Structure formats: C-alpha cells, structure tokens
Length: 213
Image 1 (cartoon, rainbow, N blue to C red):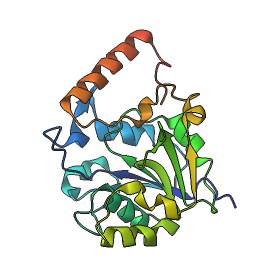
Image 2 (tube, rainbow, N blue to C red):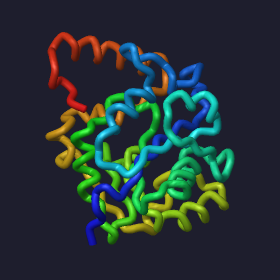
Image 3 (cartoon, rainbow, N blue to C red):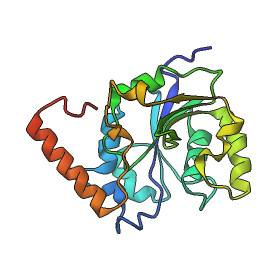
Image 4 (cartoon, helix red, strand yellow):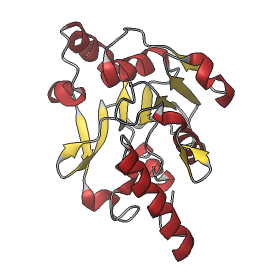
C-alpha cells in the first residue's frame, strides 16, 4: 500500500567525530556554503512533513532553524543516528541523509520518495552493489531490529538489512539523474573536500545542468 508522499520525514544525521577532516565537517565551507546547508537546501522541497537534525551538539546547529534531537542511545555511531531519527520523526517513513553529502540530487530523492510503500521497510540505493545506508528511506518497522543490533554493539548499518523487506535502486535507476553517482559522495578528508571544490569550479564553467540537484 502506497503512503502519501507528504507523510514522510527527512532526517539529516550530523553526528560523527570528523577526525579525518580535522574539524566539524558539517560546517566546512564549499562554494560559500557549509556542507550541511547544501544538504538542507537540496532536500528542502521533496514534499516532506518535516525536516529534523540529529546531533549531540544542538547549540552549534540551532541557527539552522530546524528541530534538533540528540542521540537516544549515545556512542552508537551512524546506526544510532538512524535509530534516533526513526524514534523522533513524526512520520512512519524517514529519509535519512548524512550532513556531508553536498551533491545530493533533489530529482533522484523525489524518485526515491515516490517508491515509499508500507510493504517495504527500507529503500536504499546501491553503488557497486553496496547499499548507501545514509542516503536511504527507513520505515519505523526498523526500530526494533535496529535496537537489538545496537544493544549487541553491532554498529554496521546494513547488518540488519537481511531481516527486512528492502527495495534496492542500482546504477540503472539513478543514472538518468546522476550518471557518476556523485550524489552519494560524502566528504571525510581535506583531499575529498578539495576535489569537491574543483568539481564546483568546473561545474560553474560548464554551466547549469552539469550536476542537477
């Protein structure tokens, strides 16, 4: 049974230690805008009922003007962030996005959201066969399986997928929106940030449409 598109939430996961970046990567500048602001702006008009932030540093993110929730279970990594998003979201389905994915593609996200169905627990894109767990939609039916995994300190996101009803979207599904799969790129290091800056510069030279989002 299809769920009305307006009845889903967007949750931006802003946890993590940013050790490899050397500073809070959510607020690293890319083209005059922080990474997290790129994510917020590109996911702003998908038809969601709300957009929330998951962060253990609410004061640092308050200026963004979004509801902020700290981890329900501390020190449980990205999977703990997904758990908190599902726990706090008002909607039965939650699109989770990492705060360091500045090239997320709004058209592809709409394509993803259009596949929401009550008979599916997870909708996840795959790159080279590997699910993108922080660029995926989860139904609240995932709460108990995730809680069990967290209790056992098994923090790899996709480890519980085998227990769930999953719809995967592969290269053929997203190629029309993002041929290179750049929308799944997360920036963890200064080198990756520099590559992203070069991409933005080349995009400005080639003109609009080089990387729709």
